Length: 139
Image 1 (spheres, rainbow, N blue to C red):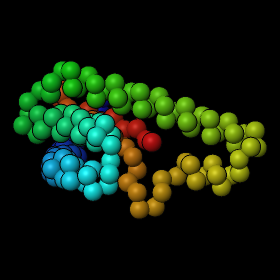
Image 2 (cartoon, rainbow, N blue to C red; image 1 turned 30 degrees about the vertical axis):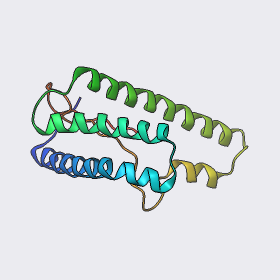
Image 3 (cartoon, one colour; image 1 turned 90 degrees about the horizontal axis):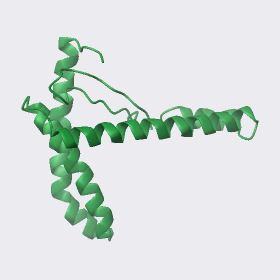
């Protein structure tokens, strides 16, 4: 765990507000977009549940309330599993490169975030009553 500096806390609060607003608007648009795209109901429901879970955690944190322990636990499990899977993906790509099964350019392409895309780093900051903490992972 790491203690965030005041300016970092301010940036995190702003990021949370932006993400909460974006999640709310996305959830509002989801039924119409799913219908427009012909998305299976099961797929739309999975995304709705994921967005609502994240919104619940961020909203509780924005109000300085402890997040639901179950939701927080699932979020941490989600991050932990994703980190482990990403580590495996990375190891597999490096292994292919070490055996000369892929070119350096392929290794570089897989290792470097695509231009115009935000590095997929998840920050779980201030998600519990224990105080600020940050956890980053990459996909």
